[in-house]
Amino acid sequence: MKFSEKLGMQYNNKINEHLAFDDVALLPGRSDFEPSEADISVWITPEHMLALPFISSPMDRVTEAEMCIALAREGALGVLHRNCPTQVEVEMAKKVKREEISGIIRDPLTVTPDTPISTVIRIMREKNISGLPVLDRSGDLVGIITNRDVITANPDAPVSSEMTPKEKLVTVMEKEILHEGKLNTEKVKQLLHLHRIEKLLVLDELRKLTGLITLKDIKRLEDSPHVSRDAEGRLMVGAAISPFDHERAIRLDLVGVDILVIDIAHGMNINALKSVEKISKDVNAFIMYGNIATEEAAHEVITSDINNLASLRVGLGGGSICQTTQVTGVGLTTLSATALVADAVQEHDAHISVVADGGIRGSGDIAKAMGVGASAVMIGYLFAGTDEAPSEKVYIRGVPMKRYRGMASPSAIRERYAVDRYTRGTKRIAEGVEGMVTYRGSVRTLVRDLADALKAAYGYVGARNTKEMWEKARYAKRTWVGFREGLPHDIIPESHVQDMLDTL
Ligand code: XMP
Image (tube, rainbow, N blue to C red; front, side):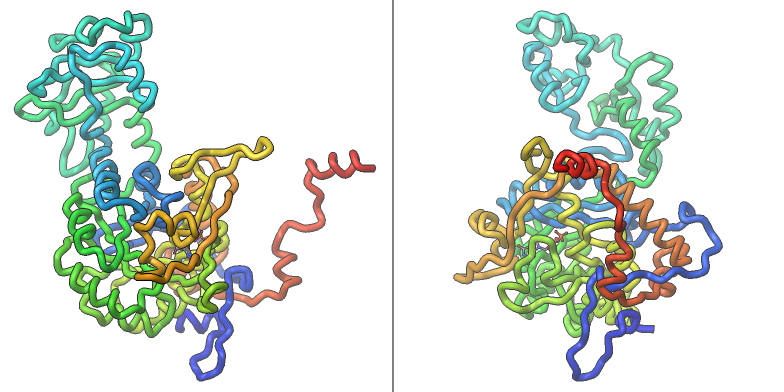
């Protein structure tokens, strides 16, 4: 069955009804397993698996390095925005790739023996770290200084007077604890316990520092078993590029970005497609092409000459901050567009993932998108409210909120770099809006909650995994009354009761 048929879409010359997330509900199906057993992992490229099918939008109020690191550690994926000079995006990508290899912190911050203790205290506070390896001018390891050493020390004293010196350092050779990209956490824990320390310095054969392992990181590794990693054990990262920015693509590729995400509102623009064909010949990264929203566009892209085409990014006008449909009259609902593109992928029997992008407001929408052939959803709005999104938390009448804006909103356009996602040349019409979103705490907790809810949805549908979700998901169209029935109703929140009584 075609995915679009599930939504009652017909292929004739009549105007098609395009249903949105709220127009439909998934129907329950026979299930012989517990929701916790549902497997929501997906292949996003032929070489990259995501344990959680969530991808952050490449938007400057959503995804920089911190978001990518947090999402990769949970088994999801972050896509760096491109509303910045190439060098800045490259640095962000480097930061993610250097963050750790299989639990080992690469390029840890270091100090020299003559650094004043006051500087160490400042670095520790600013970066929220509790220890710094000490290297001499030739880069040799000569000590470590931890927060315990500096608490009562004279701030003007040099690091050399308070550090644990070379003779007393506990170190380990990298090859003793890392095999085929996997860290032997048991061995590391034994060493940490044996020496009653919280940090282990990792050395290569020349006794040069190659990394640092902390007890905190080991605990985190054990707590998040599904980290998204590349073949070398580094965290996975995506990065947005303009389809016309050959140089940016090559520089990000050199850093080892796993997926280059083509970031243009109208991916069926043939100039863009041709340009990406050329770019793809010069990079190793996989390509996620988009945005597209129709079956014809999908056919065009799938049959194009793009090397390593792994994924299609689907949506036009459905995002929370989108104004494209209002301004231009053009748009599709994300649910229907996803079904149409997934149909084309199925027809070609192509190993290409489909990413539903725009309009996801909660786990229910994610489940509905997965049922019409998505391999993952791209999320801006929900992630913009988390700690890891790059904007300050602001309090409005005591309520914490964060700022969020479309990449074609007036203020984003003024920053110029992402302008060609929506416009090229002289056209500078705002196709996005900006505003505030509810603060949602850590993205880690959020994606865990979304994952649990998605597994529950698979349980109701009777789908053990995403492939079964594609086969088994069925939809009912809802009336407005039915939609209301599906929400909590006729209950007065306790906080409102107080207000009501106050007004009596
Ligand atoms: P959500 O609903 O998650 O949508 O906030 C995020 C997606 O919206 C797209 N996007 C825009 N679309 N004008 C638009 O019409 C804009 O200014 C804009 N900025 C982002 C993009 O696909 C993103 O992933």
